[in-house]
Image: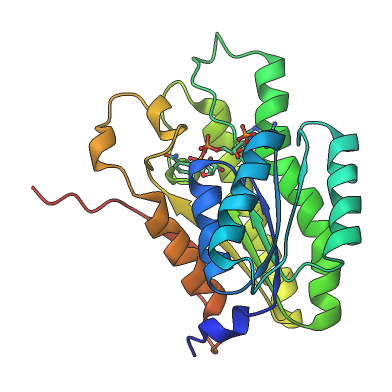
Length: 243
Ligand SMILES: NC(=O)c1ccc[n+]([C@@H]2O[C@H](COP(=O)([O-])OP(=O)(O)OC[C@H]3O[C@@H](n4cnc5c(N)ncnc54)[C@H](OP(=O)(O)O)[C@@H]3O)[C@@H](O)[C@H]2O)c1
């Protein structure tokens, strides 16, 4: 049932690939011999990440990247065009890019609303719509939407983030129901605080206790490899603090 070898030669598209969690997922999928298409806003970080992964796994896989701001529809179109040119089809889609705005309701403005929702839910919607076509055709696919513990809670000063992650969870649940007949497994993976740049923005919690993003990546590879008759389509990853 757990077959890591089914990841071999699959094409994996990752947004937010240069972030703390995204880069660990990229590394892990490369270790499992997936070809990669990586995206984020920073071309230098993307180039460095490609070189780093290539130095470890480059003989076995192909790695491509394209920069783009997922707030911008033209950038999203450019990324899709480039992915179509380079890897042609996507088997595994990881929507990991995210924005965490820490502001009270009265300090939040429409621009915060738009950027949070564009990145955290509109971009996943567009990529799922585009690349699930490939998965339907091949009757195999994995969609991993990186949610958050904020998909299940409402915390002060993060109303837009909480709302966008609730939306992503609802979207994932619906996609799972809609696409499972095509052998596409849709997962919403929702970690609590993780040791990344974004994690540093979380207030009133002990960063030292946060999840190592490598463990999140292990989990993502694990669920992508599971090919049996059951599915855990919504996964909450909490930190284990031993006192
Ligand atoms: N860290 C946590 O505590 C935590 C907890 C639960 C869930 N999550 C979720 O996990 C995911 C990854 O978070 P992380 O901790 O890895 O964050 P991170 O280290 O801050 O990385 C964020 C990633 O998103 C990309 N990004 C940001 N704005 C973008 C934009 N406008 N267009 C395209 N890409 C953009 C960044 O690209 P650049 O490198 O170019 O800036 C980076 O690759 C997010 O969806 C987040 O909500 C995080």
